[in-house]
Length: 148
Image (cartoon, rainbow, N blue to C red; front, top):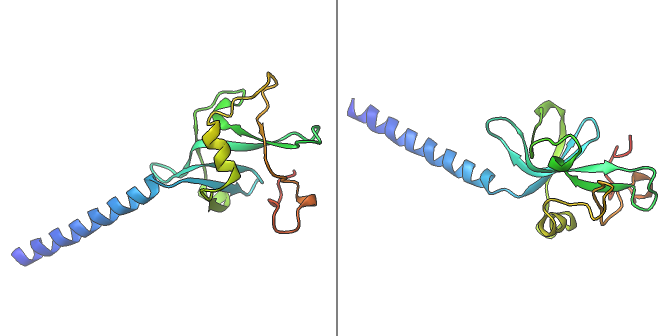
């Protein structure tokens, strides 16, 4: 009986240590891009518990009427309807996710202006420092289906 209790204690300790390491790794994760089946791209810190989603969320907003900067990035919580800075995502709708590199231009924008407060009163987000128009991409640099 003592051997069974001892073995159960060891298994429990290993499980607790593994869960702690997994939690630590995901808690300290950086920003990621999440591309959905709808063509929407969100950026933020991935959360796995209690539901899959993003916190510190940013989104790409299309402005087709603005030929100079047809896309901008906006803080999710600053859109006109005032949501919280968290979005729950159905995993079945995710096409892919990718971590942003520490040197990413987009990550630098998030660090320099975390709220992405507009510089004018139009409510527009911050223009992206790169082109997302797939028609002008060289085949690998664009984001597919960004234009709907």
